[in-house]
Picture 1: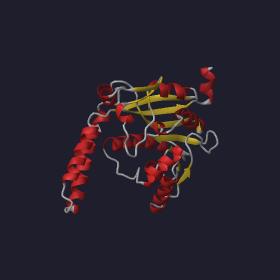
Picture 2: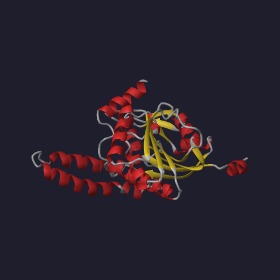
Picture 3: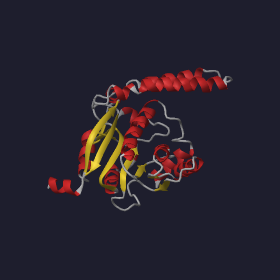
Length: 289
C-alpha cells in the first residue's frame, strides 16, 4: 500500500506528464519502432502495456493499429484516469486501461500477443514476480519488448558512480548506482539489472531473449543540461519566442541525444537495455527437453 501511495502522489504532482526529452525520447522512438513492426505483422494483435502511466505508448499504438486491442495497466489510479481522459479526447475506442499491480495481473494466462513495458522493472518491489507475470500472460510465440536500466559495468553512470560514491550491489545481477541512490523527485528507483539477470530470469519462464540493444548516456546528460540552461535563459516576457525557440531547440538536441543509441547500441555498457524476447512454442518446449 505504501508503494502504491508513493506513485499515486507522484502522478498527482504531474509525474509522467512532461514532454519526452533527450534519452527518454530516443527510447520512445526505438521501442515504438519495434512494437510497430510487431503489431503490423499480426492480423489483430492484443497488446499489454505494463506500467503504462498516463498512456503515452498505449495511445500511440492504438492510433497506429486501429484493429489492435491495447490494454494499459498501472498501479496509479490518477495515471489511469488521465490515460482514459486522453483516449476519449482522441476518440480511441481500441484502448482500455486497468488499475492493477504488475506483480499480480488480473488476466488469464496466454492472452496477449505482445507484452510491452518501458522503465518499469526498476520501480517495483519484486521484479521476479513482474518477469513471471509478463511471461505468464504472453501467448506461445508471443513477443516481449521492454526497456530496462542496465547494471552492466563501464557505462557512463557506472564510471561516475565509481568515482563519486561507489556501486551498491544488492545481489548477483542487481545493483544501484550512485545517482540512483540520490533522492530525485519523481523518479524512485530500486534496482538496475545486468543482461545476464534478464536472460536467466526470463529463461525460467520459457521466454527466450533474442536480442538486446543498449542505450548509452554519454551525450544525453550534457545535452539535457544545455537544453534546460538555454530554456531558462530566454526572457519570460517573450512567451511566443520561448515556445518557437524551445521547439526548434528540442528537435535539434534530441537528434544529438539519439547518437547515444545509434553509436552504442551494440556495446554492452549502455545505461539502458532494450530487449526483444519470444515465448517458446509447444514444439520448442519438446525440442528443449
